[in-house]
Image 1: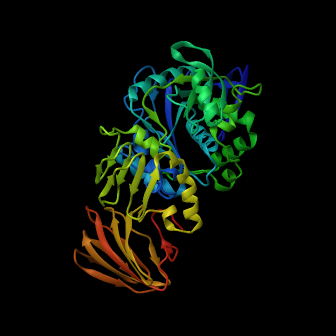
Image 2 (image 1 turned 90 degrees about the horizontal axis):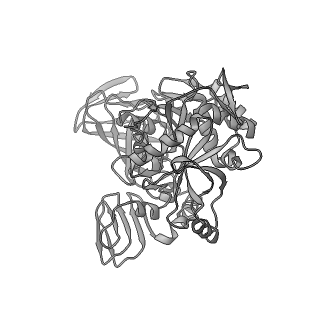
Image 3 (image 1 turned 180 degrees about the vertical axis):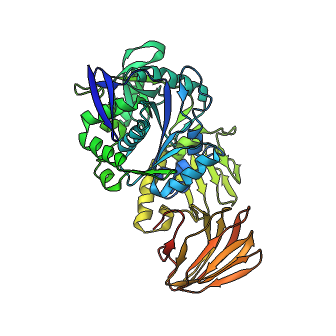
Length: 506
């Protein structure tokens, strides 16, 4: 029996297995990286404008870069697509593109017009995966997890992909090591080959007593959030369970625009999509009478962590003989089971601490009991209520042309260190309320000021009067670094009128 699923202007015909559409054999895996989270529980390192997936929490590379590289060297009978699909937000698109490029990967980046949780994000990825006429097997992975044993991950994905090819939604489950109320659980059904099980049902994060019962029973695994599923199977399942979400995402993908670097779904259409997670939208229906298809869970024993809190970061990292973890300039004296991180360069000294988290950045310091780190999310909400900038941004702010660091500020002045990447330039702009002095510290600056254009070298300076159009460019081969001194009655970032911008910002 045949069925059709409409995909972004095309019709894919296939063979129905149970309730899922299967369009014939497929041995191609397409990594799909969901990179739209904010990670507030890892404040002050993770901020709204620069969340944890863009930060090197457990290593030199960011979590996004580690995820992008996760399927490199994948062996066996499946081919891995060279271009992963990454779904991220508008505010993170330039850093996402920069980090993937630095990793030597040419990714297909989907820019969500608005946050709608993981189910619409995966649906956009499914439409893009099928846009070239192929029904690839998607390997959907959150961008902010840590996995220590990649060969073990590859083996688990290979097993799951065999099931996914046959029209099943497969996921990786983590055999629990302790009762944990921070994870969803999967109840195991009938045993299959190579340690896999049919999914009996998904269950939401339990209370402590119920979590202990799950672990004692031995028939529940943690939900890793990693899904392996054919694009057509996901679309058929969503169309059955949530027709409104399917229709909104289909229209947004069909009417979207691709500029060669970013794919932009049509904003108004995507805005109609209900906000929902993969678990709620589809997976929790697997064990019900209304199930869209069968589900299989494959065990993953690979040093997995969702890095959902500072306690999880402590747990995932190597420790000294006293159970302490240090990152940056840190000294322990008589401390046990503590985590300390110096990100801003200042020395952090911990004396006699037990089960404590200390995280220092340029503009904030967190001190927390390890047993209370889940409360950090509420703390960040309180900071945001006070309209403090530390809830959303770092002192060092990334831009598509480089970054700036607000070194000092007062009532009518602000000092910034600005670094412009080679070949990059700021927008042509002007300010209503401030004037600026620029001093070149390193590199060569091409300055536009009114009708004039001129070069500045190291130790040279210029003045930009209030209300004058101006632009800063780096025509050289090395980073351009300047010190900018602003003065005026209002120094907010929203006092920018852009006349021309390479990066399409308004």
